[in-house]
Length: 295
Ligand code: GLN
Image 1: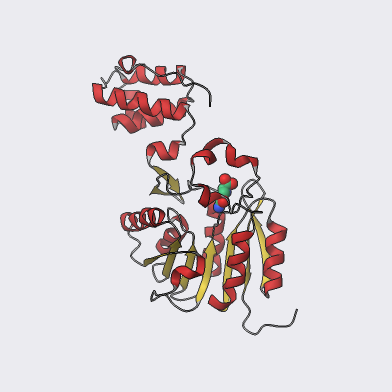
Image 2: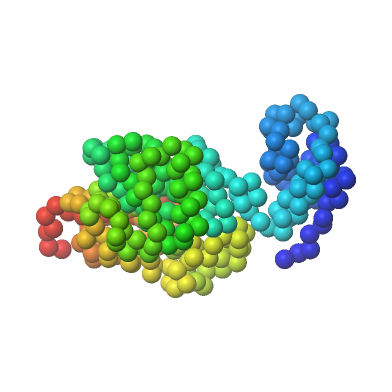
C-alpha cells in the first residue's frame, strides 16, 4: 500500500479548512464531505451554511485519523459504520460484507415470488448485516423470516439492525447453511429460500482490490471455484422447500449459466436468471414443483 500523507489535526480548525485539507490530501470531495459530516455531526447542508464552524481538538484528531484510514483504502462504509440499502440505513462493521446495490435485485425478485402468498415462511442463509432478510420482513409484516449466519459477530449485526428497523418478524440462527436450523423452532419447509453466499473464486484477482481487501474473506470467497456454497445451497433446498416454493440466489456476473444448470439438475422448474442495473447476470432461481415431472 502506498504511504499515507497524514493530515495535521491543527489544519482542521474549521469546517471549510477541513474540507479543503481532506480534498488536498487526495480524497474525492464527496468522501471529504461525508467524513467531515460524520465527525462533526453537522449535516451536509450545514457544512455549506456553517463552513466557519470551529472544530474542536478531539474531533480534529478523529477526522485526521479517519482521513488517513480512508487514504489507506478502508471502505467508507466501515469508517462511517453504516450503508443505505433499499432506502434504509443499515449498521455495518468489518464482520459483515458491505451491502451492494446489486443485491436489491435479489430482494425485488424475492418479493415478487411471494406476492400472492399469505404469511410466507422465508429463509435467508448467510445473512451478514441482514439486509435481505430485514428488507423482506419489513415489506411483508405477515412473513416469518429466518436469518442464518456462520459468524456470531455477523448475526449480532443483523439482529441489531432488525431491532433498530423494527423487524419483529425476524428470527436468527447461528450455523452453516441448513445446519443452522437444527435445534431451532424454524418451520420444516419454507415458501422462499434466498441467499447471497460467498461466490468469488479463490483465484479471483478482485479479492486483492478496493473494498474487498477489508471485507471478511469468508463472506466473499468459498476458497474454491466460487460455486461450492451455491452447490450446497441448491442441493439442500428441495428438502426445505414447500411445494411451489422458490429458491433465489445471488451470484457472480459469470455464474448464471452454471447456477441455472445446478437448479435444473436438482429438479427445479421455471429456472431463470435476472440481470442487475449493469445488465450483468446477478441472480438466478427456480420453483420447486408441486408434482415433479421427469426431466
Ligand atoms: N457482490 C460482491 C462483489 O462482487 C460479492 C458478494 C458475495 O460474494 N456474496 O464484490
